[in-house]
Length: 264
Image 1 (cartoon, rainbow, N blue to C red):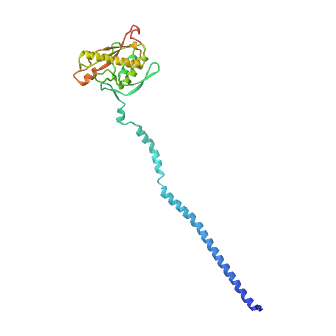
Image 2 (image 1 turned 90 degrees about the vertical axis):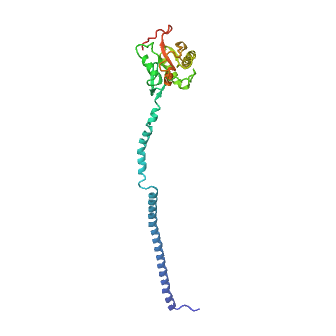
Image 3 (image 1 turned 180 degrees about the horizontal axis):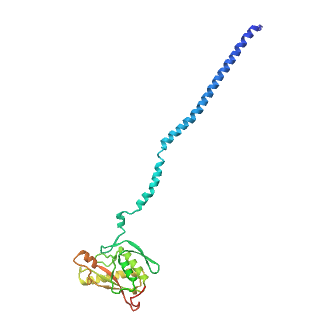
């Protein structure tokens, strides 16, 4: 078997070394390239994320948007206050009118003796009556017109709108238990005097029954039908007839309750 000569071995050795060197050089180049790519990605990815976040934030939350809610919040109280302030028409609804079409004023709370409270309109029957009750002497010749009682035409039945004054009047009489009251009914001159007298008596009776239902003792009340005898306005006009159809109240003396003069 032939053995390689020394010349052959010496020629192959340099070629092998050269191949190894060349291979090592290629691997180093590939490694450097990979490291460069990785380094590049590490630099590019954060920049892309940063730019992306900035873009999204600018698209979804512009810089000027946060200022708008602050302005809106500051303007809310003034809007609420403006809405709470009643308009002219709303304020007008608080003004009451009596059964004769007179404007009598707004409702207010009045404190009666015995820690009683009632809600009554200004310049109405109740305020005038209470003002006289506070004086040194109760007048016996004064007739106070109950100005918020409503009857259907030709009827002695009180409607629901009358209940507020019935309740207030009953509360006043209960706060001043010494008083004895006369209720008088009046009509206009429509119809016969006989019918008017009967109707006026029935209407006074309806008011008396309504006060008794609110707790006023029956023996403190009396009634009288006056018909059209004591007109207070011209029966030739619609407004005059309206004023003549009325119930008035006066304080009377009684042997059981004593004289009507009473100091408070």
